[in-house]
Length: 127
Length: 243
Image (cartoon, rainbow over all chains, first blue to last red; front, top):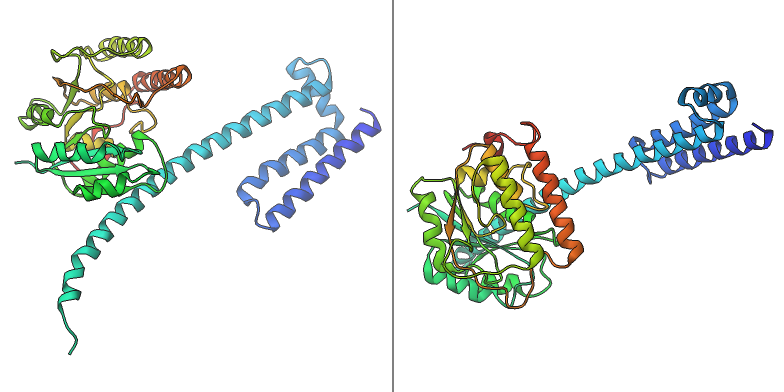
């Protein structure tokens, strides 16, 4: 790995760290979702600095070039991330549905109660 | 007389809902619940004006969700019998009594109105006809039951069934032939009753176009697959709550 490649990878990793920390600080990203990005940045630094580990992984998965290993892991990471978000969206859809149903039913009940309590108020005169 | 609720999911049905409700009123004095699924027209106002209880969804969530809102309401209000029908006037209110009879008598837990058992001739399009045949075959394979109209939305069910449907396991995205297999596997008794259905004169069918029908078929097939793979695909009858 050339020195330029190493410098570029480390710069990108540090940039990811800074952006994530600032997003969490501004409350625009929940801590729950931030750790996976921080982990990605950390992993990138480790692989860049510890080149032998990248070579070992390349040999382990039967890839020819270390860059192929990086791309394979990047794609795997994105697939896992997309799946994770699909699960979250399914859960949120269910929650929105249940909440909407509950609110809709509560509105009917409160409207009914309002209609039932109306004649009493109209009939009674002060004094 | 059992406490009965008639539920009608409706989305932009302002043109039909009043006549559908007056038709039902002429046949039965049961409570009528219209679930307005985020209509942008005056469906809710017209249904309320015609004397129905109206539940309004804050936005459009689909036919299955609207149905499930009706089931949940029926569970909450302790109804004993539930009839579901469409708001576009396709289902005839005159058939309600015949549909309810077997459930009332305890011969089955759910009665499904079949347009293909009646003497009136009803023709579907090629794609829908193929889909119907496919679902009938799958139901026959997985349940042993001979069904003629597995996609019919005209149904009458007892409290056990709608309590079961009110639970999270209900496939609200596309409740169709998969539901019949689910019910059979959960031990509910299903029966078909001949009914006459009117043709949808405006052609406003729920599933239109090659892509929509194809997507719908694939989703229902996937749901059937999940239902038939092991026991995990079928929720326990008691999952819906107290019976």
